[in-house]
Length: 447
Image (cartoon, rainbow, N blue to C red; front, side, top):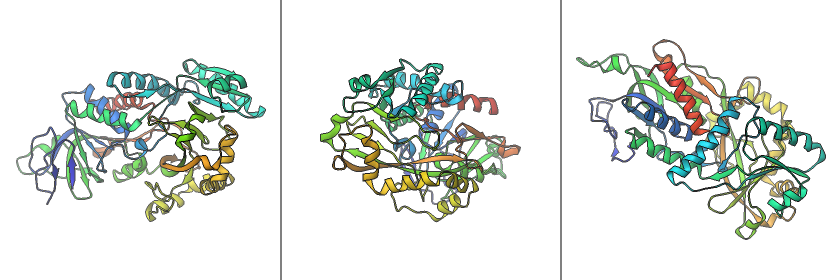
């Protein structure tokens, strides 16, 4: 079954039945579009929106394998609007994050999406962290992060009365929002502009159309065929994939490079009990430790009034494995057989074991959190939600920390653009990323 949002449920009894997709008239055998976007996470939705606003005369379809939109990384994240402190000055990530945050606030204001500019403290606990904190401050200034300042222990207590530290960066421009709500609004913009959204369409094949029915020129005009697992077909001129956790597999089925490889990491959050929400006012983050691959646990208020603590970062045994015992044999084998993951594990074995231990034994996690808020106790928290991060790895075990586009040559490769990696903070940067992706699409496909 594939579902057209805003329309009726459609069953395809055979490939020869017409597909009635929203905004597109019934056609024989298949439906045709100028551009198909695969993947309706926040990056795919933002990119689809940007493209259709730039090219209103073209036809667009957005294909999503789930029943709903933005249900994975876009719906399982901390909800932070980042300000751009961490990233190398002048880098693409820094520029996109700073611009993306500005665009996100403007978009939320325009669309009436609630948000809170609650700020963030990056807190140093030990003297040895102060040089790294000051280096972050210099980075932030070079990245044009708004209103960034350094505060002492007294300044920390003024902003977060229950937080302890010797020095901190104060970023009042950092905020929170429900990113899934934002993503769904992108989708609404896309549909209102005339785009078609098809859910329950899990792409299994992308290939060149071999022939057209007698008397039809559509195979020549729309030479790319996209089929799902039920053999439903969409034909188009060009394809953009924003596959998130499956970006490497989408690339492979179209004959492009298998690397960088996506390895899923699960992050488990704790939540403060409601009677303890007073302990946290805004975001409280650690000073990043360059020895470790991930940022570390932090305190994050949410738009619904809850407070999340975490996450840890452990290898997931399934690409959409949100529970501890979720397992998929193919996903597990793909991950462990990849030389890049093997090297990452060897380089970070102690860190990884510690993350797994703290994920099982909450007391160990609480001990770390108590360094920032001493009043916190084990009885103040409950196990909370989880997310799965699509971490791109190269074959040397390095986390791919920049954007990766992939295409190819020939009849198929020259008509496909794969967004292989859209690294954190992709939600904050989504509108700016969409501008960049649309520029790349325009450049490659000459729309």
